[in-house]
Amino acid sequence: MDPLPLYVNQYQLKLMQNCIDQAIAQLQDARQAGQFASGDDKREQNVSTYGTSNYEEAYALIQAIKDQLKSHLEAWNSDPNDPKPVPLALNSYQAPLLRTYIVHQMNSFNSSKNDELQTSSDKQQQYGTTHPDEIAHMFENLIEQLPEFSPQEDSD
Image (cartoon, rainbow, N blue to C red; front, side):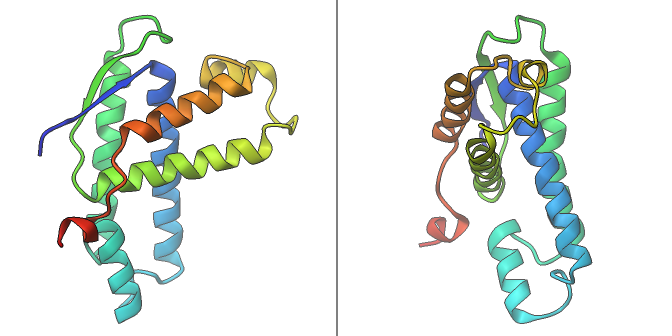
């Protein structure tokens, strides 16, 4: 698989890492809820989402994204606001999965941006800005760079 050529800043990388942390937490919750137990409907849903009905393989799929993001964050050696090319090797399940969790986080941000739960310094640290429109643009930019396709569309 060729790496996906994303052009992002350090805050967007952190944002993607937060999204993947949420994906891992949701995967663990799904396992505890029995979603990875035998059952044709659950198996089919897991295969369409993760490419497997095996929890360990699904976890490894998401962890591989997290490892790449962590590596890029650790290697970041320029201004956190300056975008640069960041290649991510994502397969046909990983790219839509990452995109889905970015959309979820963006929707969560949009629904809570008027809440005072996060201080300005928290927003500055997390997003590099406190301006809601700039934060929304960060999300939108990431979503535009990630493919929309699902694995089922590839198999036609």
